[in-house]
Length: 308
Ligand SMILES: NC(=O)C1=CN([C@@H]2O[C@H](COP(=O)(O)OP(=O)(O)OC[C@H]3O[C@@H](n4cnc5c(N)ncnc54)[C@H](OP(=O)(O)O)[C@@H]3O)[C@@H](O)[C@H]2O)C=CC1
Ligand SMILES: CC(C)(CO)C(=O)C(=O)O
Image: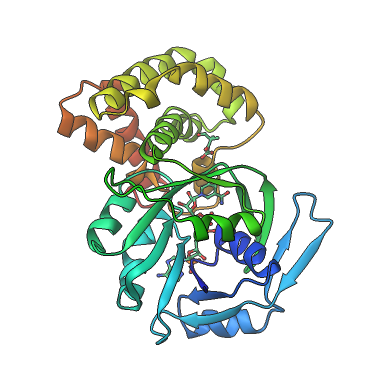
């Protein structure tokens, strides 16, 4: 079976290179003819290790969304705000036996895509791997991690063994979980507690220690929200987990702070935006979270960035 990878950014190229290294058939689905022309001037997808001492190129083919080839296995590796539009461009190439892996951070885009493609199996992913682009089509594997894969629909839990075997053969550390929603919600809550504050206070993760009371209040509200959303398991030890992440990533800039620093659109709507919308729908009392989201939107707007 062949892979198609839509979204040739940091993670898309990371996956493409590792699958191609194992002689799996991979096609990048690029945005437009200019992207194809740009890609064709490179020796292929490049992957470097974190030290950037070792790089390899993999001659992966590239095509446009309107290519006639059917898609059996699709990795959707774009940002959450691009996901629905991107999948719509290839929806006609997917069949009832196709598998789609959704790599998006946060929540909301996965449910929207599964609703958009009711007969296609969509597998949500939550990853702790880290990568960035050194240049177009050149991914740097900055941090090893694990990817959890699962179906958000409780009644669709048969394990896609071949898919997992393909990923594992390519050295992608991944496991199937019947609890993917719990993974995604926990990561969402941790992101809600850390990322916006690093933007608002323009600080590294470790410097959030000076904002402990705000984080503690936020975590209490997030725990209440997780429980109301039927994700009580994701709320266990949330505060402790948040402080552990802050401690372990003390010297890092959160992904949201990095996006803002580079004038890139953030995934706010799928992180605090999703959490606030759920809180409202479930009748939770989360004033700190709501204020944080409003302040974040205002800060982004003031910097000329999209606040959705
Ligand atoms: N990078 C990381 O370390 C991690 C990322 N994630 C999550 O993974 C997801 C992907 O992140 P990342 O790889 O960093 O994102 P990038 O921005 O590096 O890559 C996304 C790519 O998708 C492309 N794209 C978007 N829409 C289309 C389209 N319609 N057709 C073709 N290409 C399209 C973009 O093209 P263009 O540049 O033209 O817009 C871009 O190349 C995000 O949700 C992120 O939060 C999660 C954990 C870690
Ligand atoms: C900071 C951290 C580890 C937790 O919010 C993260 O996931 C991010 O930067 O997006």
